[in-house]
Image 1 (cartoon, rainbow, N blue to C red):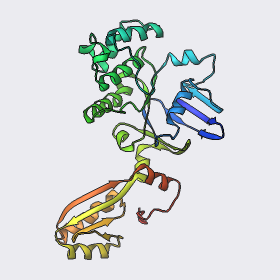
Image 2: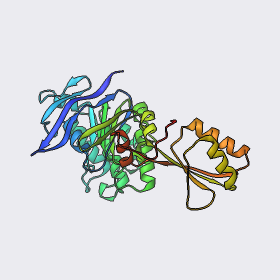
Image 3: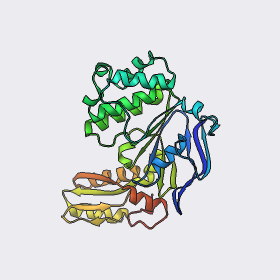
Image 4: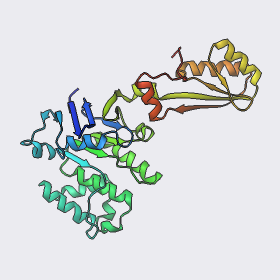
Length: 311
């Protein structure tokens, strides 16, 4: 599979501090790639280096199969759309007028504005002044600006920041369809794994400038499985089944509650069937997803008391 973004040994040093520390990213063509890490992990710095907005201290960036250099930067950026930090826009101008300015700067025909407005669902608001837009509408206008000229690559830095739940859901749906609707590969950053799990296919996790994990989301989910909370009506029957199964279950604060380790789906389903057959009366089963910090511990090999030997 062709790669759209590839970095080798990418570094950015401020004084003696590595903001980005020998980062090797590989973003396959035609996917939504989630670039995840806590605030200050180096995500925005990396994205700015990908766009040539700041110069790397060391390393190499390859975009769309070509090594990024000062000579070819503009040519590559014409095939790249981006939304870094807050979306730009002139509040006293309409959405249409803002897009006309960007289209002219990009050398894109103005007729492309109709297409991008339809994609981001702003056609009916094109004549409104941007100062009257909600934050979610301004974010969508920023994505419309990025989509002008049908770029092959979109780089979006925390585009759901500050949005309400409805706006976040709308933004997720919009981004998830980009590879199919626009033919664009998407690199999207966030500090929340749960925010991106529904839309990304590939994931890179970064902390303190270093890449801790890179690969398919399905592989990461193996690391993110947390404990399982089990609730039953008849504790004695459940206790007997748990003892016989060999599952290391810890009793909860209330009778009939246990905390189970992160069992595989198949083992968990078999345990529930056995509990039901033995009359334990299962009334609740809740899987807890690990936080990013807990995943970091798992990825770096630190001991985790919730790990299950039989996984």
